[in-house]
Image (cartoon, rainbow, N blue to C red):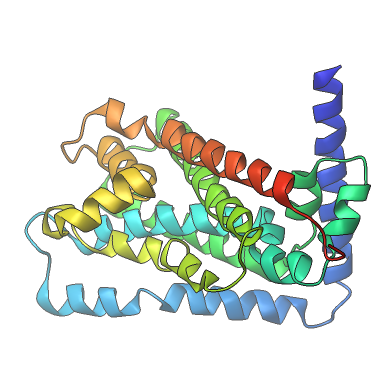
Length: 268
């Protein structure tokens, strides 16, 4: 019974996304929007590329190593942004406007309804460009592309997807209590994958601890990349990417449930 319910929710989610996809491609300029986002994404690390091109590597840290970690975090964020976009808009679209009242009236999962309430086709350019960059970095680093490498990469990206989905859900859970001052979310979304540009040994200890144990960005980027490429970290640390991401998602989901129970509606 429970598995059938989950399957129905899964089908409903994809029906929502299919509807948004068909709606998005009705706009004649949708492809130009994809190209625009793709251009913005690939030019974002250009400063790092120029620095390494001019001054060379920092010890063992080459441009390809830094870009690999950056691309893994970027791809994970892009996947979460694509498939959980509704939670990114939730504080302003549903709480402030009272639309969440209607969500509660429907006999369907609030997670599904909110996550699939928004879907922008041009946002898919971010994970696609990230995947291209990952493949380029792995080729430049000489990592053998056997069957275990793609599987390990998918495993790490699944952990990253779970972590960043948890970030969006966590923010939405906080919005039940206050929608003021939520700009801090950009510290753990767009700004968080920028931290992967800093070599692990040169990162301040407080920053390393924050993005390893509090918001596990390094767990889904540096440690999997190190284990996959043989940079010195053991395999078991690389395999922590999915458990760390899932744990963060579970904590965020718990906060969401607390927020839903305390939601009074716009008429109260």
